[in-house]
Image 1 (tube, rainbow, N blue to C red):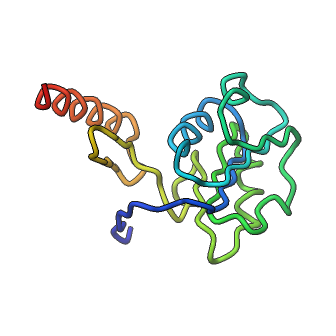
Image 2: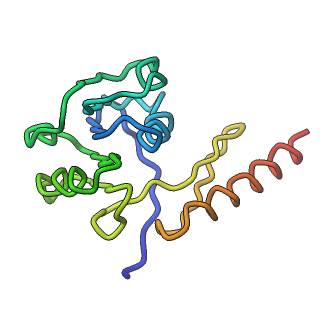
Length: 149
């Protein structure tokens, strides 16, 4: 695999689509909150927690091909791989796409992120071991909280 290049993005006024509204989608949405992105969720079923998130447009229906039009970042975050595959078929070359269940279909990955006292730390295992990234995130967070007290 070609090495990855980490970035920190300004998402103000960028259009983000999340297809799916389960636990994985909830984690992605929580990370997007407060970024200024224009967030749209498309899913026939939506977790109650997602319905309470601010500044998110929810379209409660199955994915349609034109949902990806004009979107800058697209997450396929359903528990149905056939739906995620369908979303991927409509991605244009300039769009950033993450199939949360199939890293090889994605052209970017969202790292584990720590935001603490003006610091942003991201941890990536190149989508190979999210559990390990979560563990490292917790250890770094613990360290940062101890070192600032």
